[in-house]
Length: 218
Length: 244
Ligand SMILES: Nc1ncnc2c1ncn2[C@@H]1O[C@H](COP(=O)(O)OP(=O)(O)O)[C@@H](O)[C@H]1O
Ligand SMILES: [Mg+2]
Image (spheres, rainbow over the protein chains, first blue to last red):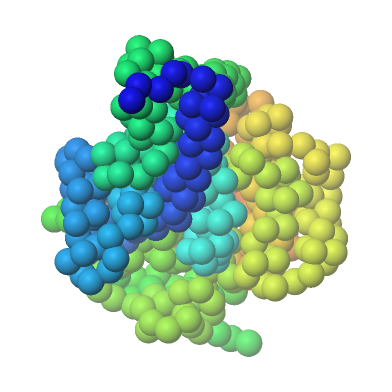
């Protein structure tokens, strides 16, 4: 039974964008919280804390995202949780994003001159005030462009969730292709939709990077 | 009160295996103005940075206004609230206006209200003669103006002791005077000051005592007349000959 590729099929694919966006948003927000923790741990005074954070980053940067997805997906069953593709994908992508954002933000924190945190310390500001009011606002400016760049990677990375059966954009394409046998048309459409999500973000990242560079050389 | 402002006893500081401060003994009276000089790498910065524990020490004791730094608890925070510091490279917060730079610490660590912090900031910006720059960002100011803001920022905490680490070394020559004048004003008002500087005219004008350091040791310590007029140490004679 070969179906035609009609507007109904197209709508099914377009509708799946919502799951790609939801998954990206969860992973990005979770990754932002985890990444901040990792970045602060990496730049802390405690040696043990720094080691643990460095190990976390190395593990998640040194293994394929697909393996991380598999491990979390099958790991859920091992710890007695129901196998749920959305939950597995959200957890795996959050851990993945935590490691990458943690590393990006560690670099940004360390790029803030030492004298800034010394001046804040000399003014008796506590660690949290020092970070919140002095170091992080300056690190954030350095980090926006690479952070948006990573968000683009993350959106594309959510396509791997299709392999564990989560119906986001890529999996929706596979389903329609299986019914219509129009791979070029179907996956061309899927790719175009990813491009429409990612391209504006790439542009934004590049614009912010140029602006940053100009701000620094001023 | 006859309490000492600062008492350092047998202070030793290492950077790894490197012995940066050796058996430092130093007592500072309230209101005293002390100038510290010596060759580069002799430990001047390290010495004054131990007083607010930007650098931890390996042995000895440091007591500031009756509070012993190494005794733990809240002592370090207490001392830092009462000790202001001015750096060679200003270290103003570039993402905040001049006024915000001056208001941050009093609001966060002294818990004063925004209105009071603002009034205090305006008062001290007036004192360092740049009230009109309050709403600018540090990058919009000259080096001399930035350093005066840094002094005002420290004064907003109402410190009892001020530490200066080569405050004029990063400045163009024409801006040195405006910063030194600000410091002289401060000295006249009775502020306890420890100042690392090679501005020997400043030392002659305001210092009660001048200290010469070499290789992490206090080599000579004297009133300015004797220090400059009749130096006993050969290293010091040599040093004075070089910077004169
Ligand atoms: N963070 C550090 N790590 C290692 N060595 C340091 C550090 N800070 C200073 N030193 C060394 O300690 C010595 C004294 O430094 P410092 O107090 O900055 O000297 P000064 O201010 O008199 O020029 C120098 O030899 C310097 O290289
Ligand atoms: Mg120095």
